[in-house]
View 1 (spheres, rainbow, N blue to C red):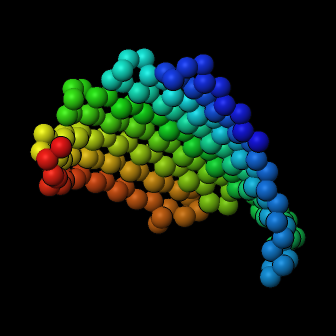
View 2: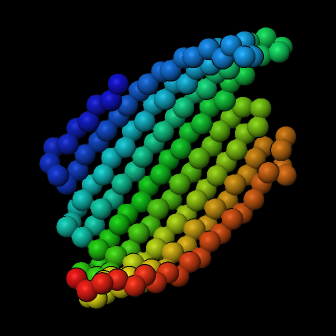
Length: 160
């Protein structure tokens, strides 16, 4: 089920709920996922878009070897902005926070940003960066990592 509300082209909100069940006969388990989400955007000026999204998922696996349910839940939040500084130049920023709980809990934070320039001949220059921090609970510390990316890109275009 999903419902949206958009009073005009400058803003909108969408929310959803879903539930899925299935049988895994190979290992005699019943599985389920319940998802809830909410997202929205707002364009306060013609050159600026703000957005945010929230997702919560509950997972259940039943019937595993010890006959106790295994459950894991996840929660994610993303927010960001896109700004058209001038005709050929735009800037993007976003932040993401995701957590999960279960036998191995995780916590992930991602900050990303970029600047894009589109020349009159269609050539495109962009500079992007991503700072990714992933951590787990004490039961699996070797999975932890920091993965950062810095990129400069040029794409030759054709005249507009």
